[in-house]
Image 1 (cartoon, rainbow, N blue to C red):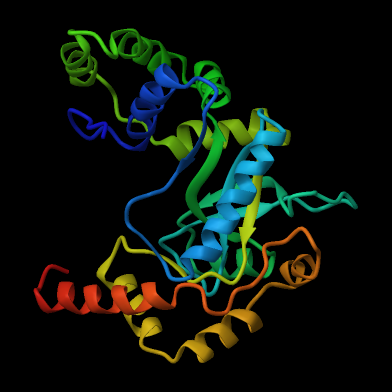
Image 2 (image 1 turned 90 degrees about the horizontal axis):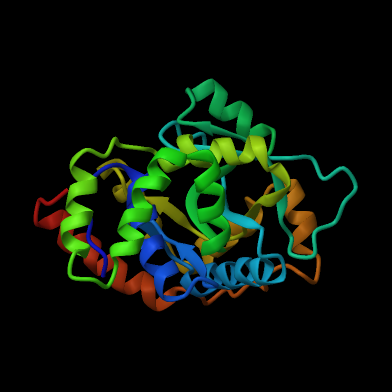
Length: 272
């Protein structure tokens, strides 16, 4: 486990463990998972992650973002608007990324969903060396400071140097300071993989946690039926292709029981 000396936003929060991974395995393919997400159909979700990893293994310069079907106009989420297919077909069912929209107002969120935008989960798959190379170009000041940490990893000075760097480190948001610039400068390298028929929520607020609990209280057949009928038109077309992930109606049933119990315990304790 890699622990930051203090919170400096998502940029350093991702870059520090990447340095540790690169030190040990510079050719590694990495998946990044935010810690406060709820995913009900876990097996099906991981099928998408494996598909993204296969795409990165095939093209090591590719950076894949997993994005969820937008089920309602959520103003506290970020959105990814995929680029038009323009007649091209992706072997992996992925789309090029046109632009990012962070926490839009209600009218904009509705418009984005109408245009086929997806919820940005910040779940990412990439080759560690490729992302560090891109960060060196787009965030050179921060990258330069973290190279000192890279050199110190595994030595007696590792903790001391890491603490020193963090004391004067400016916070940096990974999405706005890196991803958006990356989309502008290297659009062909940034892809979005729509995650189909998976119940997902960012548990960053009590309201969304309670909404997930409401979803878990429904019969499994009703949940699965809703997921099938709520797929956007372009996703329905892709779902009929052989390179999409197969639908498993029973996926996540045991997780559903466990999470329901945990949610009731957390809410009952007044922790939310």
